Each structure stands twice: as C-alpha cells, then as structure tokens.
Image 1 (cartoon, rainbow, N blue to C red):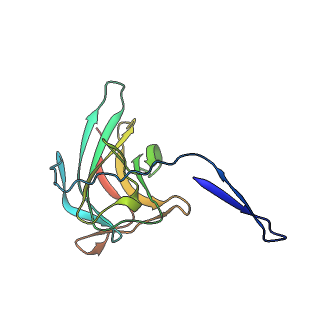
Image 2: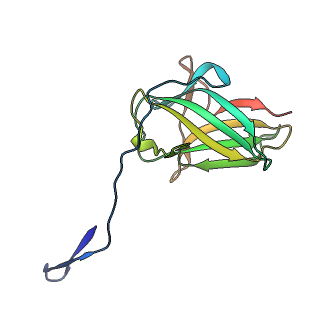
Length: 166
C-alpha cells in the first residue's frame, strides 16, 4: 500500500511513501443449507438482504451461551452492518448482549461480502440470565438504524424473538 502526496499550494506531486503490504483474500461462501436445532415457524426477512430461518443454542463450560444463527443471504448489505443478540427482561431492558460484525466458525463474514444464495451460520457468545428473552436484529453501526423485519410479507418490527430462558 502506497500513499502519494500533493502540495495543496503548488499542486506539485511528492514521491509516494510505501505504508506496508496489504493482503486481500476472498471469504469462502457456503451454498449448502444446514438444519438448525430450532427452526423458526416462518423465516424472518431482514430488509431485502437476509432470511433468518433458525438457531442452535448451547451452554459452554464457562457459563456462556453460544447461539448460532442460520441465515440465507439474499444480497450483500452495504455499508457494513452488525448483528445484535440481546437477552432482555420482561420489561424490555437488555441484561446481556453481543453486538458486532457477522462472524462464522471460519472467521469474519462482513455483510458487504455476502453473496445471494449463500448460507451463513453466525456465532454469538453471551451470558444469558434466567427469565429473559433473546432478540436478534441487524443494524448499521454508524446510525444504529435497524433493518425492518417481515414475516410472511407482513411487518414484524426490527428484531426477532428466539426463545425465553427458564
């Protein structure tokens, strides 16, 4: 990676400076659909970009909960968006959360790299307190605007409720 400089006053170009080497790799996309432990009754569509069709939930030895979300991608999503997984109490207060760019078992899967027809399984770790519900959504971090959710073509808010914890 090299940067060039131009003198603003004279317009003279200065020699470029080498900043370092950048390695660009393409993320491997998976096009085989896997079946989650928990299928949603009807897939939830986030904007025009992704369908959430199910999830798995496992308790780890450290006491955290590993939630895997199963997505079918419809189209890339730019600017890059984040996925949130919130554990909310009965009053709607978020007691635990994991927000961030999409990550799969094989590594980062930024929303701008999504490919139509691709299946993603994103992983989210958080400590889910008892007597909470888990809500999932997608948002643009710079604005915090969430993607709208539709189910069977009907508006369904801006998040999907997965399950209650005992």
